[in-house]
Image (cartoon, rainbow, N blue to C red; front, side, top):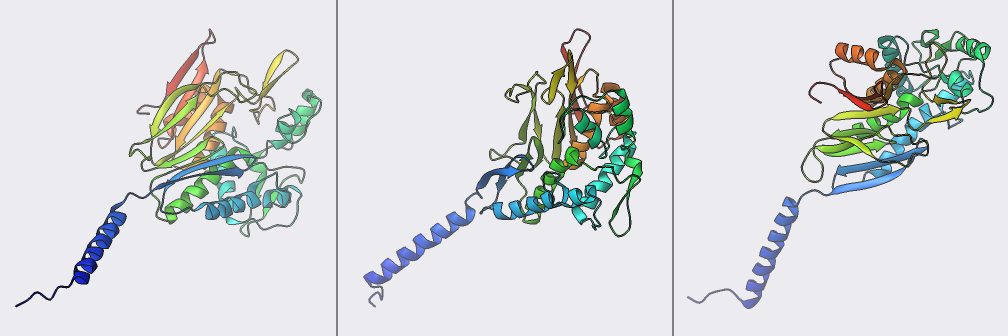
Amino acid sequence: MKSQFRPWHIAALALFLVGTIFILRRHNAPVPFQKEEGAVFGTFYHLIYQNPESLQPDVEKALALVDSSLSMFNPQSIISRVNRNEDVVTDTLFRRVFTLSREVSQTTGGAFDITVAPLVNAWGFGFKHGELPDSAAVDSLRSLVGWQRISLDAEGRVHKDDPRMVLDCSAVAKGFGVDVVADLLRSRGVSNFMVEIGGEIVVSGQNPQGQAWNVGVNRPDDDSLSVSQNLQTILPLTDCAMATSGNYRNYYEAGGRRLAHTIDPHSGYPVQHSLLSATVIAPTCAEADAYATSFMVLGLDSAKTILDRKNHLRAYLIYADEKGDYQVYSSPGL
């Protein structure tokens, strides 16, 4: 019996086999990593995440929601309207940050305080600049500061003891924005990613080389122009958030003194102690951001006391010894 195969049969079979191999190879090909960046909150964001397609439009929308809720640079944001004492019901994003801020304020004895803006402005680190305040001015402004003097009712409205009080969530908003983007990526099934906004970071899974993410901690060298990128150490991290606060960049000289941007809400003056940089690792970036700021207010010893009580936090603290040399305190196991 003669074979029923014709030449075109053989050609069709060959095409079928080639197509099948192509599909299998494509199916088994590694999912690419996307790399994207953009401007937000007066700084820049950088993303690296493993996904077949770009999610940047959705990321931009999520960040725009954070901006419309918490940005003091946006005159129509919820926090700007609260500061103008308008009758506004806050959104979920604002309430989450407000609640976390109160928790950190209570834990740190008020070292973290989202009402400290009048003092920050008076010392020339906020939105207003002018003559440095004298002791009488500082005492007067302290009457407008105090996290326990603001509250949020059941409907989501902010109440102030004094209508002149101003809220400023900039010490936690960037970290919160990182969390929002990280949550978005997780909701889309992305497990390997790095999200960074202005130095605040969340990492998950593995980097493109299949390893933990390597995150650098800058040396606290005098760098008011933010041009130095010298690293003190590199930390291999995964499935966590990291934020750093320090006075080595945002400062200025006045009257023979260096004035740091970290203001102690209790005294009303820029902090003066040996702690130069506080890097905090936490489950969320908003929490890491808030505690990093708090530690810069508290100083080394008080920061270590809180770390002993808060086992879910880890920290890398750089301080100056009596000779002015850099020393490091690192949480066990970091």
